[in-house]
Length: 544
Image 1 (cartoon, rainbow, N blue to C red):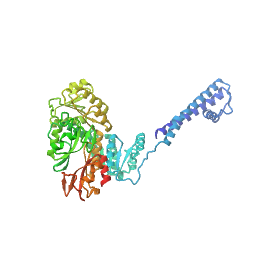
Image 2: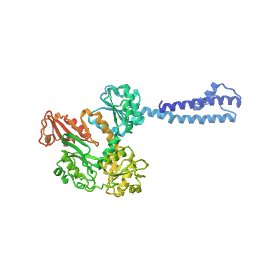
Image 3: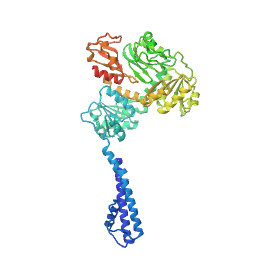
Image 4: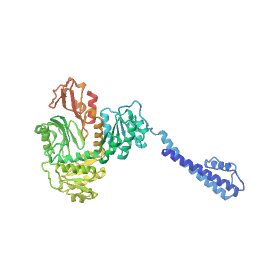
């Protein structure tokens, strides 16, 4: 029973009950005060006439003041009920009739799709990934208002309960490629159990908030249980550890000795303040910079005249030794490694993963949290300058914000930047739309949980497509390009037409990495391209 139906029942009970009560009062009043006994049916007729303002029949006028007062009360009460009928019944019913109707089932011919339960900001990243590979999806959303908003925004959505068999059958789960459960740990487990009843052969992915609950989801039948928060923590920590360890982080291996990696430029690096053309990266390291993030915005190919700043992240290809040289260029010339070198704000799941990674790398740190937990060095509010000073902000070289609330993290970033203009601020946010604000608040590097989760899910679902996803908005894809066969890379103009970069060509089992504009694409070649979701989609539409 929906809200309008409940209102109708309540209103009907009030209307009928009040009519019966007034009928009894009227019958007795006419007998006692007017001396004219009436039947109950006649009394009820008079009440109905009064409530509906259609008249009072043959009984008026009344002589006794008591009956006149009763009739006045009936008049007012009847008018009140009439006015109540409009907002309670008529307007909602009219709105229901005129409002957008979200379907409760998908078309029967929809198959090989992904069922997403339910909509979250993380789903947007996954949907972008699926769209880039022309994989259909349907969102199962139980909330009426949210489902309506999604439907009006052209999402493929049905309004149904994902924990029910009817809801998942309405999404045609039995013909789906995969199901994604991303609501809460308990609800996700319930969705997985329901999915097992309908189609136990469909790939089922469950996202957990607490990693120690993963076994229960596997017991429920989930094929893959993903915990994005630890990966997020490792990624945040890597922005510090890459500057003090010799091991490259977040490398995508293309061949035995040919890789793609991202390199954040740290404060104090010799590259800061130079344009890409002036940096001498190609001459000094021999790598090929195929893209760069400037304040969270990815550009490929990057503008040679773009100024490199602390927080710029370069995406480069090259041999391992070449990438090591680029890493040296992006590192700060002065890294203080005394106690308090890095401040970690927040000691939740992400914060603990950060400190574990820093410990493994031998980086000393100070943990700040509002709760006095084991492992917390300074108890207090990090948005208070005094707390940050106690944690050593004046001498710190990096601050990692591992806070679960975006608004709090943004304000803390402002305080940290004001407290130490040279400190490197690395931050997490929950939602992608918070990234620009966090950069505006002074952060040098920002990573969104929604991005990490969405791309982890896409990596599992699209595994057969040979997608190598990084934790930012970039894919490295191996694909055939039949429309380019016989053309040279110069003639193909892949970068200018699609926004993707050809980083290698696999030919006869060997990866060609030293490729120039004169290299001609042959029939059996498999191109290795790197680009954004939109860029990969354009490449696919144009050349495959």
